[in-house]
Image (tube, rainbow, N blue to C red):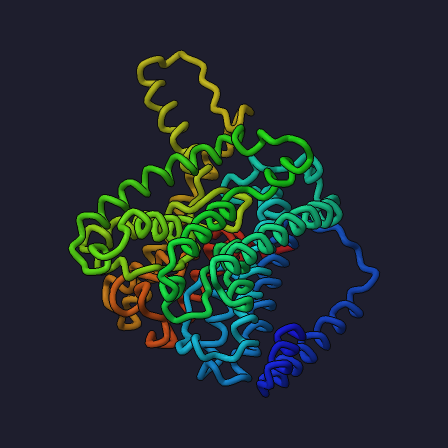
Length: 463
């Protein structure tokens, strides 16, 4: 928080006092907890890890909301909490308007929230979720995580390597934006939110403000890079350059993305809006399809105006997501691969009832518990989406706003569909009840459902 405080102080903006005060308050709380727990055992049970994960995210969101509320850029704590939750979960939904003239510290803070949230998500996906066997994530378990006692030391080592890669990607993206014509501050903030596949922008019109092909292609490149497992980049740096291509999940992700881009191009090319006629429909299709599938949420145009078919197309795309171990969101590609193998085996067993079939992922046999975990996850994902959609409708939202808002929140995409929360709008006009429901949906989707839902089971709290 002292970084945006310094930026505001240099710019002569009085909001530096807000960030300084927020920093003092959160530092006091942090030092108090550190002092109180100093010297305690560092080993974690599975139950403790689940509880800690949820509590830490809620604490960070609450702390991150302080500058938004105390600066007055959000009218209530509800809006401030929503903005901070959207930032740390890299969702990208916003309740703030007038970004083009917002204080520099606030703009930087929004970018930092998504950057830090994206980095935290990667480490969590590598160190915590596989150990907890959340939604089939155990297929990515590293040998050093076989026992809970090894989680924290090993997570520290891995996070150091991932952080270096994350910082390098951010700097490369910022330099590319700078060369393409962005101002230095805009280039840095957009680089942080692009690599984190977050989608917060310094402009109300998002990257559509620039209408620059070079900027859009740079964003496309780094949105895709942010949706690939960062551990693979570490392996490449360790002397295994083919690690990326050999990964089954990455190949499937790129193949699905290519197919969806073609479909998006057809949708954009057949629309009769003035935007598509006067610009490059292919580039518009690539940019917005990549943005929605990766969960970034940038917009170069209001694709809701491309016709009814575009609404159906982007609604489906927002659920897919990128690769596990990346900053991306959604159901994740590997789960679709596991489901495909499970369905294929079931169909094949009809023809060969006595056959022996071995399901594999990245060349390794899949534990029988993985398909069950993935199937359960997908069912809960869709069930949570349905329940959240109904709850949002009960707050007075129309059907399109409710279902697209629920899908966008759980998939951590950002913009919804329709005139209220579409890519050309914000979530500002929604009732407070809807914002709290959406905040819960963002946390639920980002922490892979089980981590949050298990806390509502009475058995979890029994000793």
